[in-house]
Amino acid sequence: MASVLYGDDDPYVTKEALKYVADGLGAEPLIIQNGGHLNTETGYTTFPELLKLLMDKINEN
Image (cartoon, rainbow, N blue to C red; front, side, top):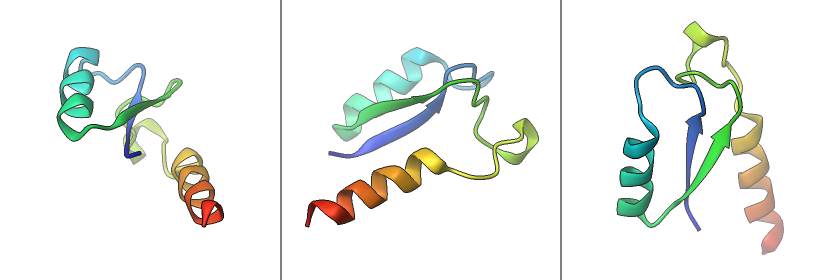
């Protein structure tokens, strides 16, 4: 299943918008605590959750 990463305190993207995008993509929201807008301005420069998702997917096969 696809995932949409979202900072729970994103100042630009609302939770309603997250749900709209996730539903439209048939994806599962992956909430990042204190992630902000998930960019360098909020200090988010690595994506360990995304790496874990990818590694889990690779290890399924």
